[in-house]
Amino acid sequence: MLKPLKFRQLYSVLFLLIAAAFITDSAAAQAPKGSLRVMTFNIRYDEPRDGVNAWPNRKQKVADVIRFHKADLVGVQEALLSQLRDLEKLLPDLAWCGVGRTDGKESGEYSAILYKKLRFQLIQTDTFWLNETGKVGEKGWDAALPRIVTWAKFKDRVSGKTFVHFNTHFDHVGEKARAESSSLILKKAGEIHGKGPFVVTGDFNVTQDSGAYKTIMAGTSVIKVADTRYASINGHFGGNSTFNAFKELEPGRTIDYIFVRDGIKVFEHAALSDRWDGLWASDHLPVLAEILIP
Image 1: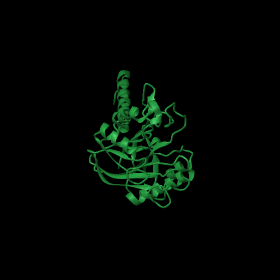
Image 2 (image 1 turned 120 degrees about the horizontal axis):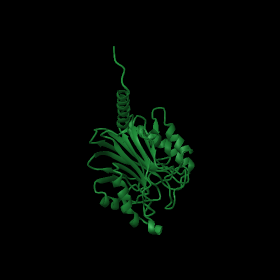
Image 3 (image 1 turned 135 degrees about the vertical axis):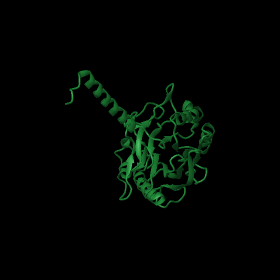
Image 4 (image 1 turned 90 degrees about the vertical axis):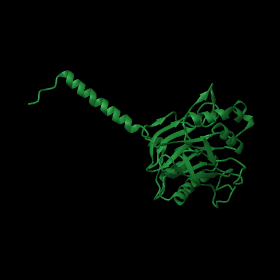
């Protein structure tokens, strides 16, 4: 017959069980080897009239944010070629791909993708225009400006996985253009990568109650998409806004997102509010997600 446990023995057993459960839960929430840290960052175009917030005063801050938060992939918006060349010098371990939206070459803003050149093999890259015809430099629907999506197919040298990264900047005026742009991205994702995993980063210029957000979240009959903020195993870190206009954050103004195809695990999500003596790196917050490609 077993002897009953004494109180001290029972206490020890309970302590060990609780500790083991805590360790198991903590380990399950940690991103494994091969995870990717993906960032979307509207870096604000080089506008000399921004004064103290002009690009020459911000470029080091932008580079420092990317470096400090150990981003492996960064989708930037509003970048001009001169700004990308600055970031090349400040972040020598990163390469980039993309074209200017005005002419498909070097003119206008880029929705470029920065990536760690030692970790990723760039297999293919291209840019498509968010309009009815796909014509280079044309506005679409009711948009005020030409808008683009730059995409890149990568092979991760760490995990051996292949995936596609789409990066975009939706129109700030055209409501129809934004909704149609969401539909077009879903269509192109299927055409470009079939059933394979993909990530979409961008400044979508919409909040979650918009048609554009609902369209991309609805997916299609064959493509299902998750917002990394809500898919994150460890929840969201930071506030409920990603736009600051170089002032204070506007409550509820989350307009920068990272979406992933269903099946991609998400471990962390954050809206990063780093400041230097009250000054921002940009008028948008960078958003970061740590993901695992299946």
